[in-house]
Image 1 (tube, rainbow, N blue to C red):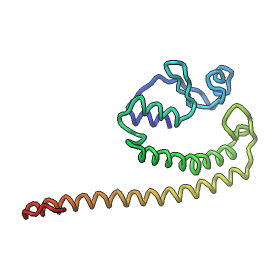
Image 2: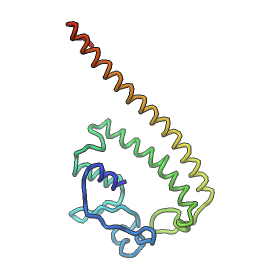
Image 3: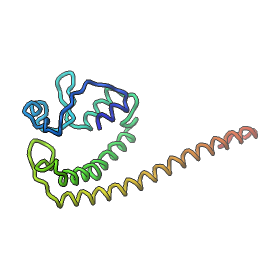
Length: 174
Protein backbone atom coordinates (compact mmCIF):
# COMPACT_ATOMS: atom_id res chain seq x y z
CA UNK A 1 0.00 0.00 0.00
CA UNK A 2 2.79 2.42 0.85
CA UNK A 3 4.55 1.79 -2.49
CA UNK A 4 1.32 2.54 -4.34
CA UNK A 5 0.80 5.67 -2.24
CA UNK A 6 4.36 6.85 -3.01
CA UNK A 7 3.86 6.18 -6.71
CA UNK A 8 0.60 8.17 -6.72
CA UNK A 9 2.40 11.02 -4.96
CA UNK A 10 5.30 10.84 -7.41
CA UNK A 11 7.69 10.58 -4.47
CA UNK A 12 10.80 8.43 -4.34
CA UNK A 13 12.44 7.50 -1.06
CA UNK A 14 15.33 5.14 -0.35
CA UNK A 15 14.11 1.60 0.34
CA UNK A 16 15.54 -1.58 1.76
CA UNK A 17 13.97 -4.83 0.58
CA UNK A 18 13.07 -7.36 3.28
CA UNK A 19 12.78 -10.94 2.04
CA UNK A 20 9.53 -12.17 3.57
CA UNK A 21 9.76 -15.49 1.77
CA UNK A 22 12.79 -16.52 3.84
CA UNK A 23 11.44 -14.87 7.00
CA UNK A 24 13.93 -12.00 7.14
CA UNK A 25 11.33 -9.96 9.07
CA UNK A 26 11.65 -12.52 11.89
CA UNK A 27 15.42 -12.16 12.22
CA UNK A 28 17.03 -10.67 15.32
CA UNK A 29 18.35 -7.78 13.22
CA UNK A 30 14.88 -6.89 11.94
CA UNK A 31 13.29 -7.34 15.39
CA UNK A 32 15.55 -4.51 16.55
CA UNK A 33 14.01 -2.32 13.85
CA UNK A 34 10.43 -3.49 14.42
CA UNK A 35 9.61 -5.86 17.29
CA UNK A 36 6.24 -6.57 15.61
CA UNK A 37 8.18 -8.25 12.77
CA UNK A 38 6.01 -6.63 10.09
CA UNK A 39 6.59 -4.48 7.05
CA UNK A 40 6.57 -1.71 6.04
CA UNK A 41 8.70 0.40 8.32
CA UNK A 42 9.47 4.06 7.65
CA UNK A 43 12.38 5.50 9.61
CA UNK A 44 12.20 9.27 9.95
CA UNK A 45 15.20 11.60 10.08
CA UNK A 46 15.00 11.76 13.89
CA UNK A 47 15.05 7.94 14.21
CA UNK A 48 11.33 7.55 14.84
CA UNK A 49 9.99 4.41 13.15
CA UNK A 50 6.48 4.17 11.77
CA UNK A 51 5.35 0.55 11.43
CA UNK A 52 1.81 0.87 10.13
CA UNK A 53 0.85 1.55 6.50
CA UNK A 54 -1.89 4.02 7.37
CA UNK A 55 0.39 5.97 9.73
CA UNK A 56 3.08 6.06 7.05
CA UNK A 57 0.61 7.30 4.44
CA UNK A 58 -0.63 10.03 6.81
CA UNK A 59 2.95 11.12 7.43
CA UNK A 60 3.72 11.18 3.70
CA UNK A 61 0.51 13.11 2.99
CA UNK A 62 1.60 15.79 5.46
CA UNK A 63 5.17 15.89 4.19
CA UNK A 64 4.19 15.83 0.49
CA UNK A 65 0.73 17.43 0.27
CA UNK A 66 0.50 17.44 -3.54
CA UNK A 67 -1.34 15.66 -5.00
CA UNK A 68 -3.81 15.33 -2.16
CA UNK A 69 -4.73 11.69 -1.60
CA UNK A 70 -6.26 11.78 1.88
CA UNK A 71 -8.99 14.42 1.54
CA UNK A 72 -9.02 18.21 1.30
CA UNK A 73 -11.26 18.91 4.29
CA UNK A 74 -12.64 17.17 7.37
CA UNK A 75 -15.49 15.54 5.45
CA UNK A 76 -13.27 14.13 2.70
CA UNK A 77 -10.68 12.96 5.22
CA UNK A 78 -13.40 11.20 7.21
CA UNK A 79 -14.70 9.51 4.06
CA UNK A 80 -11.19 8.32 3.17
CA UNK A 81 -10.78 6.90 6.69
CA UNK A 82 -14.25 5.35 6.52
CA UNK A 83 -13.48 3.58 3.22
CA UNK A 84 -10.06 2.55 4.49
CA UNK A 85 -11.53 0.96 7.60
CA UNK A 86 -14.22 -0.88 5.66
CA UNK A 87 -11.77 -2.17 3.07
CA UNK A 88 -9.32 -3.28 5.77
CA UNK A 89 -11.75 -4.97 8.16
CA UNK A 90 -14.23 -6.39 5.67
CA UNK A 91 -11.94 -7.06 2.72
CA UNK A 92 -8.23 -7.22 3.43
CA UNK A 93 -8.49 -9.01 6.77
CA UNK A 94 -11.01 -11.48 5.35
CA UNK A 95 -8.64 -12.25 2.47
CA UNK A 96 -5.68 -12.54 4.83
CA UNK A 97 -7.68 -14.86 7.10
CA UNK A 98 -8.48 -17.11 4.14
CA UNK A 99 -4.99 -17.09 2.66
CA UNK A 100 -2.97 -17.38 5.86
CA UNK A 101 -5.10 -20.26 7.14
CA UNK A 102 -4.99 -22.15 3.84
CA UNK A 103 -1.69 -21.69 1.99
CA UNK A 104 1.13 -24.10 2.87
CA UNK A 105 3.60 -21.23 2.89
CA UNK A 106 1.88 -19.86 6.00
CA UNK A 107 1.90 -23.07 8.03
CA UNK A 108 2.52 -22.01 11.66
CA UNK A 109 2.47 -18.36 10.45
CA UNK A 110 -1.31 -17.86 10.22
CA UNK A 111 -1.00 -14.49 11.99
CA UNK A 112 1.58 -11.78 11.30
CA UNK A 113 4.03 -10.83 14.01
CA UNK A 114 6.75 -12.40 16.10
CA UNK A 115 4.76 -15.40 17.40
CA UNK A 116 3.86 -18.57 15.50
CA UNK A 117 0.20 -19.55 15.21
CA UNK A 118 -1.09 -22.72 13.58
CA UNK A 119 -3.50 -22.58 10.69
CA UNK A 120 -7.18 -23.24 11.37
CA UNK A 121 -8.89 -24.59 8.24
CA UNK A 122 -12.32 -23.37 9.38
CA UNK A 123 -10.96 -19.81 9.44
CA UNK A 124 -9.82 -20.20 5.84
CA UNK A 125 -13.38 -21.09 4.86
CA UNK A 126 -14.85 -18.26 6.92
CA UNK A 127 -12.37 -15.80 5.42
CA UNK A 128 -13.33 -16.91 1.93
CA UNK A 129 -17.03 -16.37 2.68
CA UNK A 130 -16.34 -12.97 4.27
CA UNK A 131 -14.31 -11.94 1.24
CA UNK A 132 -17.07 -13.00 -1.15
CA UNK A 133 -19.59 -10.89 0.78
CA UNK A 134 -17.23 -7.92 0.83
CA UNK A 135 -16.52 -8.13 -2.90
CA UNK A 136 -20.23 -8.23 -3.77
CA UNK A 137 -20.92 -5.21 -1.52
CA UNK A 138 -17.93 -3.37 -2.99
CA UNK A 139 -19.08 -4.15 -6.53
CA UNK A 140 -22.50 -2.63 -5.80
CA UNK A 141 -20.94 0.48 -4.22
CA UNK A 142 -18.61 0.95 -7.18
CA UNK A 143 -21.51 0.60 -9.62
CA UNK A 144 -23.35 3.29 -7.67
CA UNK A 145 -20.29 5.55 -7.69
CA UNK A 146 -19.88 5.07 -11.45
CA UNK A 147 -23.58 5.85 -11.94
CA UNK A 148 -23.22 9.01 -9.84
CA UNK A 149 -20.07 10.05 -11.72
CA UNK A 150 -21.83 9.67 -15.07
CA UNK A 151 -24.93 11.45 -13.74
CA UNK A 152 -22.87 14.39 -12.46
CA UNK A 153 -21.03 14.61 -15.78
CA UNK A 154 -24.33 14.52 -17.71
CA UNK A 155 -25.92 17.13 -15.44
CA UNK A 156 -22.84 19.31 -15.84
CA UNK A 157 -22.95 18.94 -19.63
CA UNK A 158 -26.67 19.60 -19.67
CA UNK A 159 -26.34 22.64 -17.40
CA UNK A 160 -23.47 23.95 -19.50
CA UNK A 161 -25.46 23.50 -22.72
CA UNK A 162 -28.57 25.04 -21.15
CA UNK A 163 -26.56 27.94 -19.83
CA UNK A 164 -25.04 28.61 -23.23
CA UNK A 165 -28.41 28.34 -24.96
CA UNK A 166 -30.10 30.63 -22.43
CA UNK A 167 -27.37 33.22 -22.67
CA UNK A 168 -27.59 33.07 -26.45
CA UNK A 169 -31.27 33.98 -26.10
CA UNK A 170 -30.48 36.83 -23.72
CA UNK A 171 -31.73 34.88 -20.65
CA UNK A 172 -28.86 33.80 -18.43
CA UNK A 173 -30.54 31.38 -16.05
CA UNK A 174 -29.57 27.82 -15.36
